[in-house]
Image (cartoon, rainbow, N blue to C red; front, side):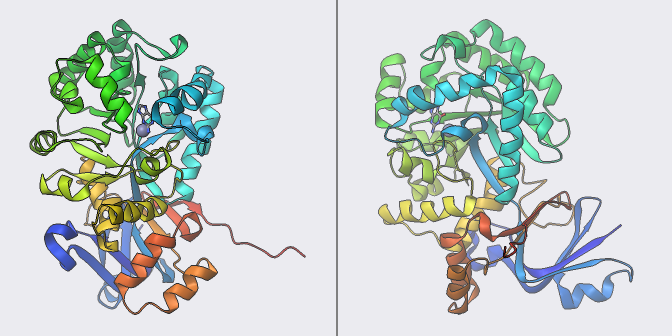
Length: 435
Ligand code: GUN
Ligand code: ZN
C-alpha cells in the first residue's frame, strides 16, 4: 500500500561543486510517495496529489523538511563510552581510553547492549546508514548486525596483530578464517555489507596485510575501511615501521588495498601523489571534522580532494568525534574549512551527508536521494525545534540561508522522525510540562 508524505522536500541529484544550484531539488510544498519501502514518486504536491489513488494515506509534516537519511561514513561502535575523554591526542588516546573500552567487547552480552544503544543513537540523530568499526572480537560484528534491524550498515571486525594490548590482538593466521566466516554470515544479508577492517597500518604486520589482500582478491565486492594520515606522530611511526614505503597511503597501495569500495578515514597528511592515487583508484575519504578538532589532529583539505576527483563523505568518527549528529559534524566541517580559507555552503554540506556519502560508500544506486526506485530512508527535520533556531529561521530570507543556519545550529533536537525503508523507526517524543 502506498503512503504519501507532504512537507518541504529536498534532495541532491548531483554534486553542487560540479553542477551548482541545479544539483539540489527543492519542493517548497512537496510530496514523497513510498510503496514497499521504495520511492515511487517525488515532486510538487500540487502535481502529485491529483494522481494519488483516493485511499492513499497522506502524512502531513508541513511546515517541516523531509530529506534523505543522513550517512555517517566512519564510526566506531565500541567507542560509545569513551566519547569526550579528556586531554590526549591520537596515540595516547588509543592506549589510555580506546583499547580498554574495546577490551570489554570480549563479553558478548556487553557488546549486545552497546550495539542496541548505538543503533538507537544513530536513529535519534537521523543517521540511516553508517560504515562501522566493530571491535577485534568476531562476535562484536554479530551483536551489531543482529541489532541493525532493517538499517543499512557496512561493518567489519577490527584487525590488529601487533602494537596493541595482547588481549586485543588477533593473528595473521586467524584473519583469513574469521573474516571469511563473517563475510559468509553477514555480507549481503538484510541490508548489511561487510568491510575488511585493518585498524591502521601500525597495528598490522606484513603477514596480516597480505591476508587482507588475499581476502580482497577472493571477495572483490567486500568493502575495506581503515585510517590513514590522521596525526603527525602516527605518520612518522608508519615511516619507521614501513621504511620501504613512499608514503603512509602507499603502505595500503602496496597491498593492493586502494580500490572502489575502500574508504580511508582522515587523510589529513597526504601529498598530491597520494591524492592522485586515491582519485584514479576510486577509493573514498571519510572527512571526520569533530574528531580532527577534538584530537588536535589537523585540518582536512576538501578542495584538494575535490581537485583530484576523490569521493568524500562526512563522518562522526565517534568516539574520537564528539557528536553522533551529522549536522553537528557539518558545523565543525564548516569551521575546519574556514581555517583552510575554504567555503562550504549548506548545499555542499548536505550533499556530502546524503548523496555524497552514498557515492563514497558505493551505495548510491540504493540510497542517497529520492530517485524513483531507491530505498526509502528519510528524515523529518524541524528547523524550529529550539528557540534559537526558530528565531534564526524567522530572519532568514531564502532556502540557502535557512539550510545554512540548520547546518550550523542543528542537532538531534531537530530530528522529528527517522524512516527506514518507509517505516518510522524513531519519532521524537513530545515534551510535556510536568506540574
Ligand atoms: N587510528 C587508529 N585507530 C583509531 C581510532 O579508533 N580512532 C581514530 N580516530 N583514529 C584511529
Ligand atoms: Zn576512526
